[in-house]
Length: 282
Ligand code: ADP
Ligand code: MG
Image 1 (spheres, rainbow, N blue to C red):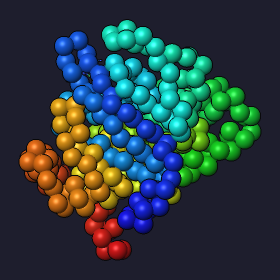
Image 2 (cartoon, helix red, strand yellow):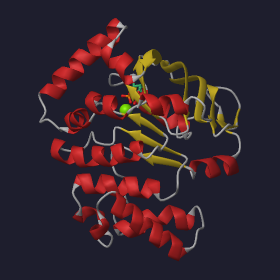
Image 3 (cartoon, helix red, strand yellow):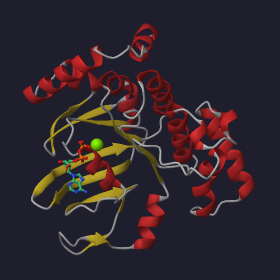
């Protein structure tokens, strides 16, 4: 992981966020956030419920338009115009192109119920990216195999477990060949025993060197998968660093308190065994 980080420092920023502010009415949700995810880096966002993690992630693909500040993807700044609260997308053509390169996986799986798993995975490459059907089907089947549900290609979402549906959603995001994968608590709607199969898939993607920004409530997972961890507190970055710094040499009292509470939660869940496997290998 340290080697990966050293290598990443010379790489170009894939996601660069500068001084992002966002309010909903009188509620200041993001209060000047800046961070960068470089090529191959996994950046995890942690923090209490309501600290602004989802809003921050949604600003990266402009599902939420920030009041001020900039988001750049691969060095290209997303164009916005006007001033808050009327700030809006500046160039629909540009945002459509950029969004087509961002693989987003939400808490809920957002699969089309009337399409098979294969059709769900093929939809964006065919319709948004206008790629050829044969190549797309091949890529889609490869992605389903990668997440371990090749045999579910012709099933409908309702016929799959939650963990399988979420893996299908990951396959769908991967099939657009995204520059970056954005995950917003991808396992929070799952039972613990289904959670682990999804976490394993995300870990494989991290180990392959995919650039990822990940919101997670699972501290053990954040520690095992991240190059950098950012702790958000009330819409500001309270602490950030490598997993060892953030979890092993915590500075902020607020982060200490948050981690204590998270540890308590995690101790009451069945053990996923993910980090243990890592440690015995190391
Ligand atoms: P987190 O993901 O860290 O739990 P969120 O980014 O979802 O936090 O929310 C941060 C705060 O912003 C919360 O108080 C939430 O209620 C508020 N919020 C989020 N989205 C909206 C919205 N569309 N309208 C009004 N308030 C919102
Ligand atoms: Mg959230």
